[in-house]
Image (tube, rainbow, N blue to C red; front, side, top):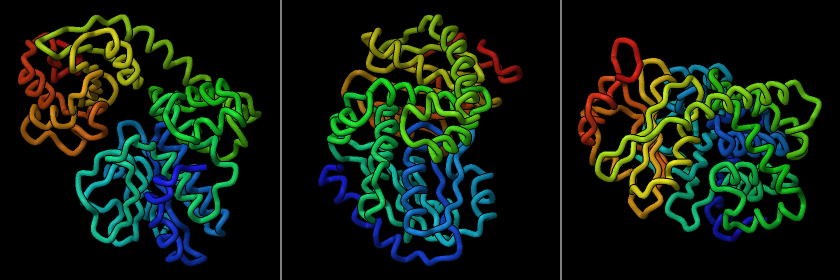
Length: 357
């Protein structure tokens, strides 16, 4: 069951689907986190139930829908249409000339011409992309049995206490422990050093429920368990790093090939009485610093980052949610950015080695 406001948000989806024809596939591109692959799995299953062939792709490590490799990956499928899930909305098309539907809950940075945009941004409470995808599936009568996929997507982004009717409903149908365990395991793939979330998405397309994700007889389950062990070890090291504080900003510097910065920031966000808590990872993607920013206050972090941006920060800076954002900056840009926040040389990156100064 989805709330009426979600049904209203999904109202344009049936019209988009009605324009599809049998034969050529529909491409689905989704983000690599659990909300993204949960939304992607829902949309794939819904389209298949309607009789459409589907080609699905998931972003890689540090990737975005507008990364240089994405359009060629999508184009090789010869899609008649494209659905982009949980990857933001920009004015630039992801695959020029192909009708596109965006299913997303982040702050849009532009309006893509001719596209269908199903956005939850600005609503209270803000739904996850998984919840929006479930509402889309419901709008074309193809949502039966897909509620648990929306649940793991929602737990990933908002926790199991998220104020949606779905979370009440799934507690009656599934054990919340199984849903939370499945979420943690699925997220381990994109947090690993390789960042390869395709096995996690493949598992969601096979599994019949959350327990099937954690204990099913699939090779992907063992892969995800190895990823989880790798990430747990990296996280154990990362959370030992003490923050450096300048004014109202607390900065934690880590260096790991694993995506531990969003995990570490959650620890310090609740421990520190500072409006801005930032965790920066200089080891995640060579050549750049990936950082996550959180606040426990009403401060709008997107506006904060916009005001503090270095010259020409690039397209991967300051997107997401008002109180949960971040981005990626090249080493030289990071050093300009962090100096602008008032930090000294100890917070800079050695541009030759990628190590912290």
